[in-house]
Image (cartoon, rainbow, N blue to C red; front, top):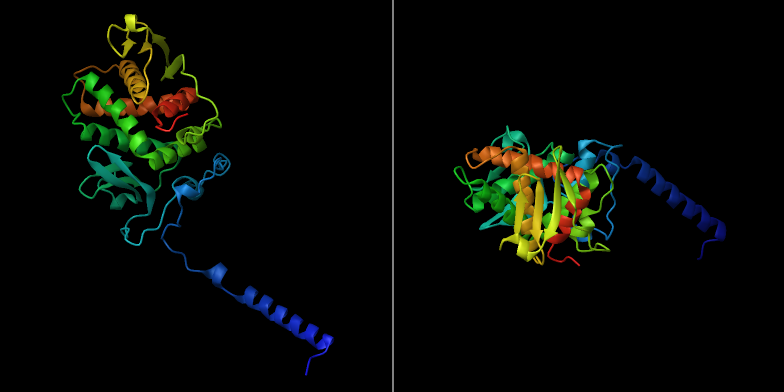
Length: 314
């Protein structure tokens, strides 16, 4: 026997009322137990123009880490790891995973970052954010680059400049996902709205111009192209007296960024007053602070270098 229209309507209202009461009483969303497992995220899901959170209006560590670190859940991840980065870092013969860790679970809890080569990982302190996170990651790259290339205590200034230049370009070309993440981080924390991540994806609309000057600390360093006849059979020069980087005309491929970064690193060493007799740690700290100052104070110059180092540049 078919129910009347009024009876069907009454039953429908009862069902809706029961569903609403169940939803309001359900503790799942409000009382769901928290877990330390990082939420899944994939770099492949990044849109063409990724959103950039307003970090200055919301500087909490949790929001920064959610936006920038992209932690991924791995069922085989160590229990003492706060989050895994969704990429491996390959330099020389090494292939390391990058992890956020509490200080007590790091190789040396007094440092912001540690290279744990025996465990095949880069350890970053879990409370880092913004420029501290960018600096710690860059420091780990510098240490790994110098170690993998045998650049250590006793090496001359020229060796330190070339070790950094070849290591940074190698990182960009062998680690596209990590390179994208690093430049996305820089784009989001920079004081001016920048699109380094777009350039790192090879999606820039026009080729960035080579800078004509770069500020290193408080000093102006000029840059210009010179002819092959003026280059003296060298690919580039750094003039100490005029603080000028000179690049030979016609450089291309990976050779262009290697020479540019090499000569700019000479400028950093000059500004910091380093010579062949300075200790290893002095070179490393000067390079770290010098390159962070270039990135922060010269966004157009860094954008050009990102374009030059990215293998898929247009």
